[in-house]
Image (tube, rainbow over all chains, first blue to last red; front, side, top):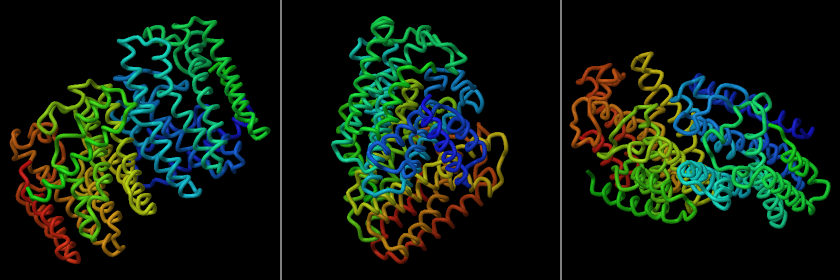
Length: 290
Length: 290
């Protein structure tokens, strides 16, 4: 794992803990359920992308920290709802029981809703030029909304009965996982004060990174082990899900991931040394085991 | 029903339909599930409060129309999630089958999430002074969040096993239903350009209105009939829920509702004729049968 990722993850973890400390009127068990899924776990991949993109355009990471927390909170929302019995019905996440296994379905539903709303509220508290904060919030809402992540989860659901081809699978992932990764990078670039040319280059990077991320995710579900993943591998296979390796075979899926990572690295050229961390993240996606 | 409420409801209904027409990349079934719960039903009580409060401070209702739609969309989100099997497990809402009865649990969950995100996105598109739009969005997020509606739903859940006293019941409703009603009125006042004195008076009105609304809701669950309510009456009694009539008796609960409505009317005095509609709404709450 890149050393800077560990450093960024620590900053995000501390800042998230503070976000939850500042909400006195929240019922204790709801706060507990929200903290359970938002704090103390995960690589902080998306939050780190916010900070890294901010740095790539010459901004100060600390200014983008609330936005990084916001992105991690809404990501946690999506995981909690995705794990619910009526969705993927998963028991394990990041090596521990899923939210509804610990708190029950009703509270998990509410904790997810709460993480979404609170994440957006944290976003509005970002200290930056108001126009850029507003644009960041719009970008996040678009990435989450019915044409973004929530739409992608719907497509994923429909794909259970109507198996997609490669183009269909890419459409699912562009919305389901790609949109939030792109938003994370875009928000970092916006808050860091990036020019429109920089933002366009960052978006190219993020689109390829998001696709590579998903292909590797599919590969790990086939070839990874429980201890490293923190969740049960082979679940895609059991659910007969459409995945890149299922559609392309292992070798072609691996090649496609490598090509997307190369494309992501290419897009970073204009940033020179400032893009080092984002490049490390791309290579990390290619090599990750969990 | 006040004639102006019917007129406002028509404006909101048209504008909501347009909101959904403008989202081309949304999976058809998700859009359908969202429209099912957001359009073509309900009194548009909260949306009308946004428009009425805007008018009370001398603003132009049409400018607050996106905000009124946003409030109705996030209200629809709360109903869809609240009706889910893991929550209240209700089969009927506004006289028709609940969302999950028609679309299944997974899609209902996603449609609820989608209505929340899209409602907030519509809010950001309100054309008004940017500072007032940002403040309105913050007000809405606070009303929805873990210290507002979502917190209230949690308290309501906890109250099933640990029966609250009157103070506890009021705390539940202040958060669960009161917060969004107050936000609706506050947002209308903000977008209409209200002074801080006007906003304070409106907030007094809204706090009493919200409380009266809930007491009457409890009374109707006891004394209303299915045809008028559009949902099965007596469900609170069956679930042994803490309600105002259960805690106070019918007569004292009715008296309390009347007192809160008087208080709401009192708070409107500074607005003179411009407050007429909000006053009609308060009287309507006292007399409503559904």
